[in-house]
Image 1: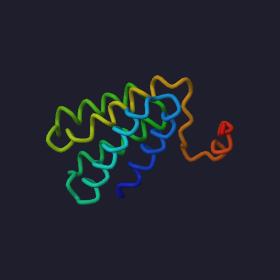
Image 2: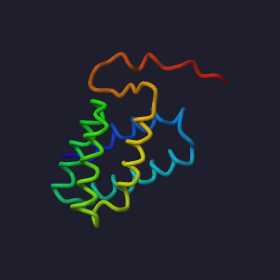
Image 3: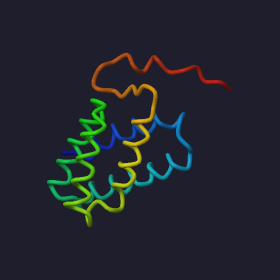
Image 4: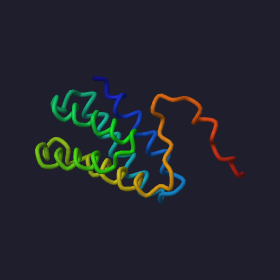
Length: 121
């Protein structure tokens, strides 16, 4: 499973949060996602962690916040040494997504890209 299958949707979700969430918070989440990506790319994550992260992302895309949160908690309990550096970022991301009025995450359907609000400049 390439890191990108998990990281791309997480980064997309983070971008969706940016207009509504403090820059500092978003930057911190972004840094932690980078740590996750590096650990994944370097083969530092065990198969169960990678598998659960891919499940977590799938639930996020379905906007199943509670399920995603459950998966996050199980990772924290079962694999704390592997995930402690970056999982807090994922947890925060879930929390912020949950607070957004309506989240448009790409779930393979096209056409969401045109719905960008006009850039004021």
